[in-house]
Length: 345
Image (cartoon, rainbow, N blue to C red; front, side, top):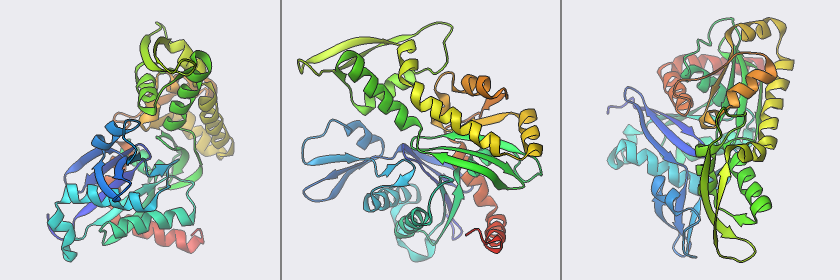
């Protein structure tokens, strides 16, 4: 495990993925933490804690410490990170000072300096020797196998849990980018709202996520699919079951999806013509779990007239890209120095 242990972390709103240099992705768990309110003790982290969402007694809270791509509960994020780092490195390694790893963490392209600072501090407190940040679209592009070092435009649309990051990348840097707080979580919320309005039925966030995965769609399907959904009748207060179709979910997701399509449009509008020509040649690459919602690629393709490709391992792209970037830390240090010269930081 040696001295030069390097870890890449995709600190996502919905999922945390950890990449260890030389080993690949070693951990993929939901970013959920269950805490005992009375003692402030961590009871469960990751998958175990996710099972508790919406199912806990009063004194236990299941918290998602990241919201919309940024840290909303600093203390819990730090403890979650420490737990995951200990889990992948083994406790005795991270407790020995000389074995502290170098950590690279992904952040959405629109984060403020304060939010960046919070991520760096959380990683340092969790046991990092040095922390680097990499922007999500750049990591996603590297993870999707794009060569971003060339003087050629690549466009990435990374639909995560909390944010959708859209960027045009050339020569290893971002030319135009935007980050909107509309992604997988907003899809879930829209489904919850739709069922409440249409069926007077309340469902939890785990159920809405299941609906999104099973029958979620944003583009007309050739063959309609449906599923049974159980929730609570808001009028009688009793359990209720309804059958939901993909067409209904398409209606439910109209608003958040329109926001993503508009954001893609606005980035294309600001893209220099030479790079826009490259993109129409090479297509738009989609990454992130949210890109797997049925038809999102087809819809963006229809609205922009540009070919859209979903990356091979869409969910892991950002973590893989962070991992590959770890192998080139020297390059990143050079980029940071160049950016500092340009006065961007």
